[in-house]
Amino acid sequence: MPIRISLIAVLIMLCSPLVIGQSDDYQPPRSADGHPDLQGIFTFRTLTPMQRPPELGDRAVLTEEEAIEWEAFENRRQNRDLIIDSVGGAAYPPGVISYNEFWYERGNGTVADRRTSLIVDPPNGRIPPLTEEALQRRGDVAAMREASLGPEAQPYAERCIVTRTSGPPMQSGAYNLNVQFVQTADHFMIMNEMIHNVRIVKMDTEHRDGPALVWEGDSVGHWEGDTLVVDTLNFWKGTAFADSTPNMHLVEKFTRVGPDTLTYEFTIEDSTTWTQPWTAVIPMRRIDQPIYEYACHEGNHGLHGVLAGIRRLQLEAGQ
Image 1 (cartoon, rainbow, N blue to C red):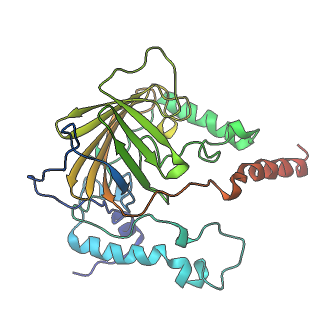
Image 2: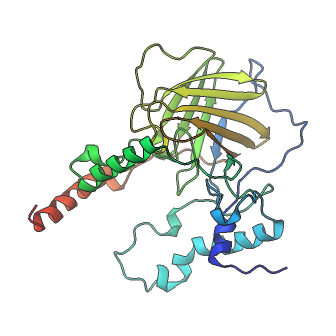
Image 3: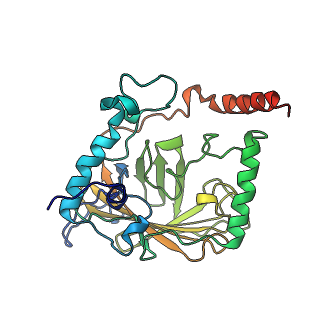
């Protein structure tokens, strides 16, 4: 039955995890120590939104027909600047857009489970509400950034230090959505293409003593059957996910479910930021391309222009 593409339908159909169902009896290849071999380069790009569009309510999965039509619609939308002059084609005025759609790699197809959100808990597919403390904290940070007093006031992503897509936890976004895993008996390395973030996970050990905070948290790992579990605490303030705090506790799970697919699951808990813990599941697919060197804004000099621009505006305003 034909489906009308409307704004609501667009929101409804924003979904496309990469995972493809595997048989329950799949046996992953093993490393020398007997655990599943998770090594390789994977992509986690997907059209699936982190949160379910509110219009969907409790609806967790699309029909096959909806997914097929959404794929066709979204592939055209993502290339609109190449084919529609009014939104960036050949006749579009220069200097009014930054990257065009050629540079993005959000994903381009739907797959078997057709979920409507990456979040699986709470059941509504939405990030839980912020606490009153978190709302106040977010307002204070926004006011500081609006003033643009110096580099310290700018978001860490704008300063090319950490980003939300590379995490932890990792999540899909606009580009650089690739990660390489290297595995030994006592360490597990996670190297993201975005920002070239590298985490070294220590296996079968305890978290470091004391309150020392580190940029990407203190990560320790262990195996639960064929699933690698990574437990991370002690995030440096400002680098904990989504304006949370050093109180954030992150648990990530990596499970190989097919010859070229992994399931990546994470659960976040921070009682000073969200009213309850929440969990997301993101499929990862093996790719045969390498991880390229990352360069953050052209020449890594973008922040200088940001601060120079706001100083100029303040000068013109007599501030």
